[in-house]
Length: 136
Image 1 (tube, rainbow, N blue to C red):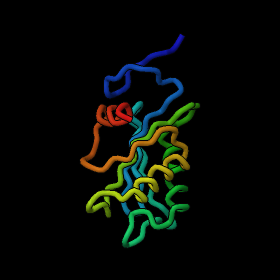
Image 2 (cartoon, rainbow, N blue to C red; image 1 turned 90 degrees about the vertical axis):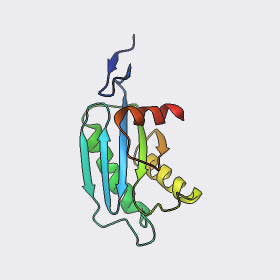
Image 3 (cartoon, helix red, strand yellow; image 1 turned 135 degrees about the vertical axis):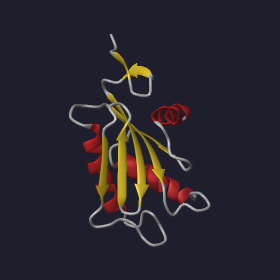
Image 4 (cartoon, rainbow, N blue to C red; image 1 turned 60 degrees about the vertical axis):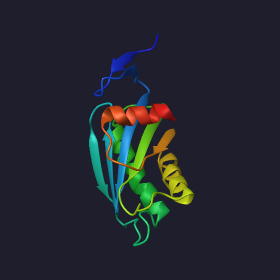
């Protein structure tokens, strides 16, 4: 029998083996919010991953930073899946190209995400993060 619980956004569903994370990317910084328990993690990359023309100029450094932030935000315990909404916040004038969208998707998958939605727009609340993931 599955265990169900209600998360902070008021959404009921199985959460024992699934984590939902909202990731915001800024120049050389990653901010992760765990939707299930409101845990937040902010990491500054060293060495930096940004480039003057692109938010992600060094994929390896960005992935390492994101991987550590996701692990910290997930917390202790085991998760079969980690769903991520990744939200680039800088150097996105005119939207993302297909290459940039793929970069963010691959970045999250390489850092441990099972399902990834790349979001460009206004910041999202918990219920909006869950809705974006359900839309995909």
